[in-house]
Length: 288
Image 1 (cartoon, rainbow, N blue to C red):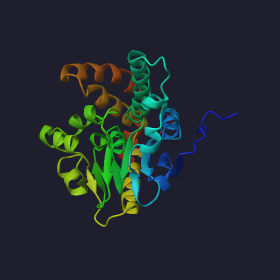
Image 2 (image 1 turned 120 degrees about the vertical axis):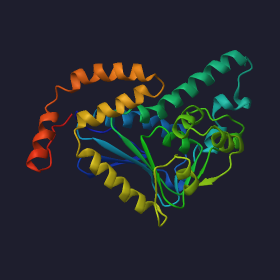
Image 3 (image 1 turned 30 degrees about the vertical axis):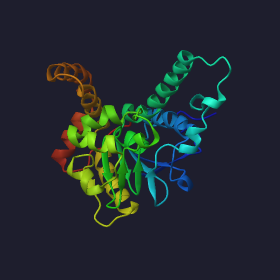
């Protein structure tokens, strides 16, 4: 039987701990440029649900295996063969209304799987390199921080396969970037854009100087190591309040912060952080 802090078995994701309390999740389908089939995305929420509550995890690095891609998005061949989307597989009793219900449930399940990254209690930094297309944008806008290699190429590709992006990009990207003209430019045209452009509009917060994945992983490790040195109570609370306040008024955000901190301020972490500062030492925080 799996232990209390044992991760779920995954075929398409690697999970390692390169530093104490720092989890590295790697999309592991490099031979297909980390493209997602249904089997891949079904593993994702189980893994992030585990990491969300794991006392051994305080920050998460999310990257793609191999040198060529974070992910190229949906595995189009697998997607095109799906029974719900393939009219030739429909029964003689085909009913558009009932098929629409099946499609809606399928899309909702897919959306919820990717949203598990956003809902994860621990901060997630997306490490982007090579190709980051379609679903790669959906995934990255769920992360708390995005950094990328100099050679990263992005595109919101869904219109090229006859779809409006439906897994989160059209809802989250406008909040992440805040430039409506640029967002419609890239979403309506499916054109590629590079790391420099992504940084200029605020989609990513850091771009490597040399190109390639290794440099960006090292930057992610530096950031994650800094985050896990902080109080896990404070870090979790900060992420929770920022996410909760995303679509709400300042007044609502202040009220929620007051309620949240009425409990969080009772933590021993405040005293430990204060003492460590006075004694000029690193604070030691208990597992959450």
